[in-house]
Image 1 (cartoon, helix red, strand yellow):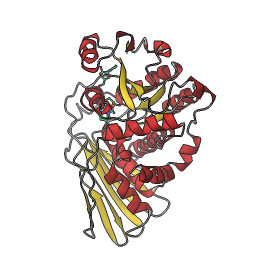
Image 2: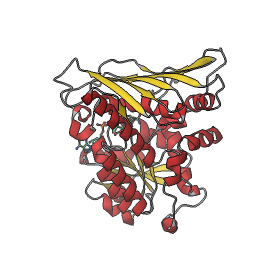
Image 3: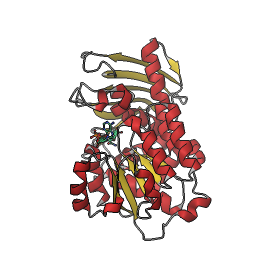
Image 4: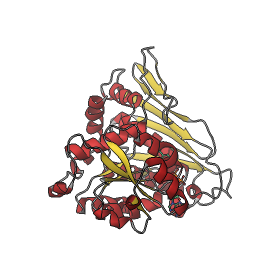
Length: 365
Ligand code: NAD
């Protein structure tokens, strides 16, 4: 799986990976050595960190949970006890610069609301830590650029937590598409819809989320269209529908968009905070189709091919897989296949999709 992962994702991210930060002279700062597990500090102890990432860290080969950054003092005792964390490895968002003195921490995994990723990434990079950041990378291209620049200036790596990129069914679909096993892919249908829940959460507040369904779940469908084609969309056309203008006053509720790719493929995609249950992609090529449904859940990924051949692999913990890959990149001093530039590209395309919604016109990316 690792070979496939490298082969196909490196192709897809070739342009950006070339620009990705290699670990240069400051590598001497790294306390990495073969066999040593890298210390990961979780920044933001919300639902994802608690339910997925911290447990996944226990399953990794190359990482260990070594610290926490939280604004909630009430969470500290429980986390310290559960994960045997020393007091000196507990930080607040305002004290995380002090990590510079803490050799137990190699990587900061930023898991806060989208519009805080910049602040927390810059603080971590300045403290000399590599940064792995949740999706979307940030809420504007300019803010993504600032994150990339901060990590470059500190000679640290920046990776985006695109977990599906390390999942075997997705990797196989990329192979089928790129090797044109069923002929060239012509049409991709992709969508992710959830019922987002409470109206008082940051996901529906523009200042913290940057956008609604598209930024939160549509990004998975967007990523799929890009990694299946290995191309960048050149033209997007989008529309939004809002059935609850109170709850979704600040962000998009349901968005559909089409995207044209230079090789001739066309994608039609959906993102929704209202309609639960859409979670798939299907790629149709000249001699058949292949699909994943569910494609984007934490587990239970299922694949089908039109020719009846199996598209089935063991389920993996995607968070453990992506963290191990990032740690290996740090240890082996090679670029990640999911660099900051890859996250910035998605934000650029989502910005174009929002512009299309606003103007009612197709937008060149
Ligand atoms: P959450 O609301 O459960 O947790 C957010 C954490 O940030 C909380 O601990 C909260 O206390 C903290 N926080 C710090 N400052 C805050 C502020 N000003 N306002 C609100 N919270 C603040 O959210 P989550 O679901 O854990 O999402 C966190 C990040 O992870 C987001 O970027 C999200 O897009 C991403 N995410 C990714 C996946 C995935 O599958 N990769 C899944 C869910 C969320």
